[in-house]
Image (cartoon, rainbow, N blue to C red; front, side, top):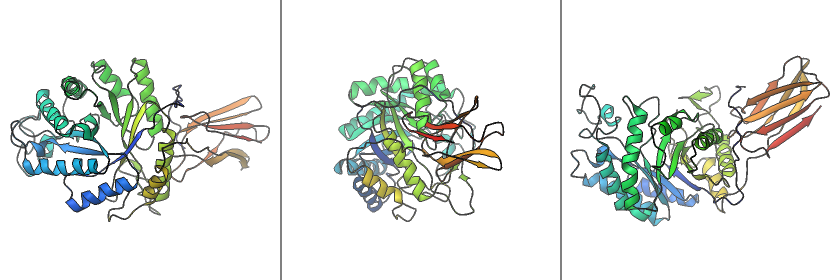
Length: 420
């Protein structure tokens, strides 16, 4: 078991908290009309309240700042309007800088030739005002259909697929500061989200504060996958240290059901779960944040499995429902509520060593403490991909006269106890 993550002192829940908006990503403007309609119907039947949709800037304005591609705009209208017709709010984000606006180096390989131009698209705009114009256009066009507007996508990603180049933090903060005022003037009640980060250790966020982002957003968009609760807590701790009480919007969340017998434990750095444990981990997370006042949304990634590495979907690649879909339909049929399931712990002796074992949610990490004969053993750990854990304690720990606690780092009320 990996020993990870410090236990933080942030209060996780509030009895009077509003329930977060639960949604899904992966309904694309580039789908066929039939598939987009089917996916939106699936989201509605699962009792979801929102969809996160990309506005691909390079497709919308391929030529210049003065014109929009009518086919691309019609396609985006289709999914935004389709969501609204089903009572689903849209969390809209824009990224993918067109060639004419990109800050990509002039000598970048491929330049602006070819069909996709990905190397150019992944750089931010050379002039933030070009993105301000796009953002105000989109917010003005879709207005009340939006739940929030998220500025860009994953600028901190190490692979630089979305935000390449030098001075990443300063350039992203400058973009946020440029966009925020005009959007608030246009739509004062619409939440404008910054951050859109995947890193759960707080370093990107602190760098954003250092660059002056505070005061230029209504919420932080965060993309946390295998350890969502711990990452939420760590981020909240960094917020509090910087005097920031704005809420977090968990706009990407999920586990991949890429487990196959004899297959790898991880694919593309994501833990492989079974379809059943994928559903259970997701439900545990939603229950855990259901009364957390500072978590305003939880958006699942994604509607459909993409390939062998990315099986995050509610549906498989052929469109068949996975257990996650039925779990959501049941869980969200009524107002979301609950808490993490209580873990279990059992003490035994194997080969003259004390062993602590049990089950725990994949959504959290846990603090194991074993005390006996004046000795104390403490470790922070997580369950394996089947929701189980087993720790062989050091030989100096006594085998009798010990007591143990196993406690979630998210909620101290989720504690299991054992004596031997």
